[in-house]
Image (tube, chains in turn yellow, blue):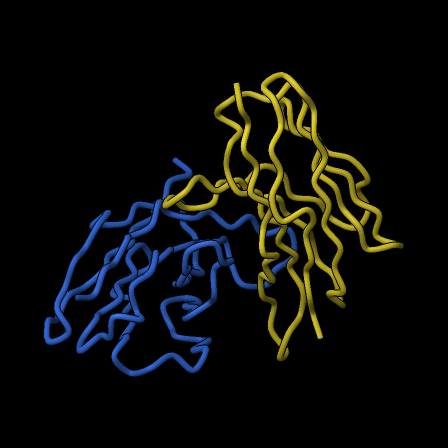
Length: 114
Length: 115
């Protein structure tokens, strides 16, 4: 069964600190992996999208890594800011029932404290 | 313009009401999606339209009725909803449905409360 699992479920860090969020997936065949940031009650906003041939992709203070062999991805946030408080969702695009679908992880809820 | 616009932002409706959610994009995307998201849960796919035709219905109850009048617009008609249908309804669009390196853009959502 296609699954995307994220850890930790929630995380509290102090402003200015770094953190790393994890994503493991069992989606096959695999098309691409995306990280989204979702503020409470708002729609998800794309941070990065990576194909199997990409190992690292950065977007400002966000750096995503992908290991297609071990089916693991991470999102590293550098020098966290209060505005980084949100849910971070790992989404894998893969084939299910003969069509491509976005398979969502349950997200990591990040709280950045002053 | 990489924006998906959803209206209204908030909606409160009674169980006997009929209402519609609207979604619009002007990126030339030919795939549009409706998702339902409950609090602290990931979005759940409801419907997919590809080239203005319904291609996926994830066994959604008939009280939800999607409509795609043209390539830029997507509606979700609501009738006789239940309180458990209260959720954030998200619209998304992508260039097509192939899934190969297609970026999906989400709207800000409509917060629906059924009373």
